[in-house]
Image 1 (cartoon, rainbow, N blue to C red):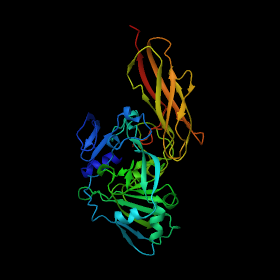
Image 2: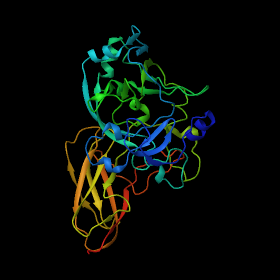
Image 3: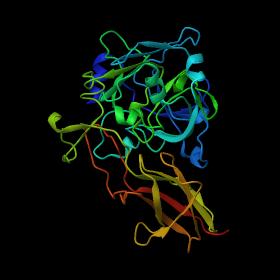
Image 4: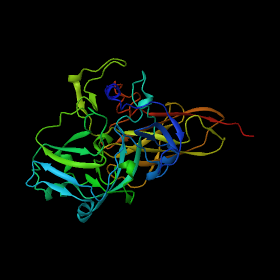
Length: 376
């Protein structure tokens, strides 16, 4: 749905991928599209808690704008006592907070769906974990005397497309916007936001899908009803009821996507890797939107038996956990490894993700195959 609509406007993605270092400020990544940039992170960079900025994935619908910090203003309007225009210096004068949070594209894993759906064929790399720093949205709204009982806050950015392309505006529930973890980020991993990630200011909505993390943020508008633009409806909606794979969804049965589901990936070894016949450590990541990871189980025999993995690091809200399992292959041969996460609400990764025409919210049990070599 989204792909076809954007194609008609001339801003659809090319759904090919290559791994080449062609984008300034980025290391070698999986290139799905260079104008606008859609860059996927190779899983080898997911073995640390924080994802480095120069390998953090990039998803853009519209061409990247050039924003001059000296002339930049963040406008606060709508149901407020006074309209405000805040500079970066103004934003930095407010109390600053740091929130570790996992950012995941709504279409992460789209390439695994069968039958295939149009759009960027993300595999395991449209995700990253960072420490985001800046003022709370609630503090900014209080400066303007905003009506915090209003149901919505509209967020808009500086990116624009060709003529007739709709603005990328997201309407977000006010209760989420005034949560203490919801920020206007100025820094990413303790460095100023890179251009590709929304310099100089980006909305941070921990636990929710990346569509809501508006980059190059220019306007926060307190609203009485949700925006009726394309990027709120029909885009980025999910069927309330399952549809048969390969069939369209009823537009009246679509709902807004907010919190992301429980999910895990195996990050080492990698799919189709050959490993020696010796003890090895299986590694991975797990996350659960607005919930926390309770456990991760791993199978080394295609799901016949499961072992509980060891979680490392702090169990923080909104941020992924690293996990490991030490395993000694019993003999040479081919092995299917699976990972299955469970969150604090007892939600478990499904065997099969819910197919949908847009390829959103893929969260099936992760599966890779490896070959254990014979000892020489």
